[in-house]
Image (cartoon, rainbow, N blue to C red; front, top):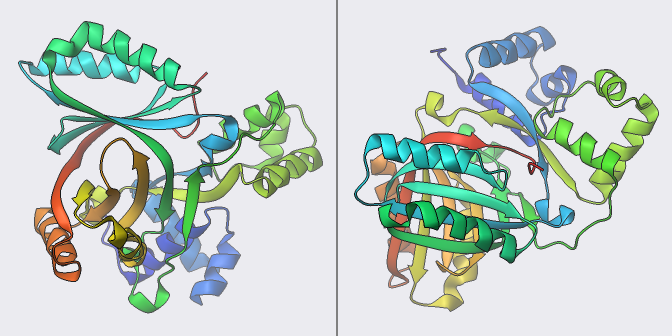
Length: 320
């Protein structure tokens, strides 16, 4: 594994703010030589610390509903669990499949056009595998907020602004826009020339369409896919049941300002407050819960959590 220093972390932080920034822009921000920045980014990519670049797209602008579904197994074997996971991975309506430990064994994300569509998928799944499910849990996302990986840098360099995804009216876009979004969703560092050739479109027309998608807030950001495990971090999802709902805004502010919290999830049908954090092991997770209890005495009724063990599927644009 590549040994990383503070400069590497600052570079990753700037790329995660906007992965389409040029080497020249990053070098000016960090007051480093362009050759140094280029070399370090290449090393981070070669060592798979930066695994790729993706575009953040507001699914609600495309008419999709996001749901999450947790499953706790019973009476299974490893082979049967793999069969169940493969079944889920092959579903086009499921965009995330996580094998987890903690209160749940699986965490799934669904992108559907209607709740009826989700219900039909769920019935089909449960007809095959319900007897192997000890418990399960469904929630509908209202929106979620994505924060930067502020733990990468010292406090004075942190940026606590967030990207809000969801809760938007559907925006009218055409098939060509859909093709553009599909391409750039999985490669935020796309070449305008190569993409325009692939789509049989002039560079100027492509630039115009992308600018329009940004203006309409269909495209929200361009980010780096950073392998947190190579930074010695683990991914935790925490769902809180709170005693005093009037303290919710204070919890939201806490999440926004915490350097390790990278998502705040606002859902219907399950917990009062949910967030995702990248932490350096179980002790850090325990200390985060302890910090909440100290800062908000008496607020926490109970909580559930999972730690991501393996990501079987994660796509950035709905499959048709």
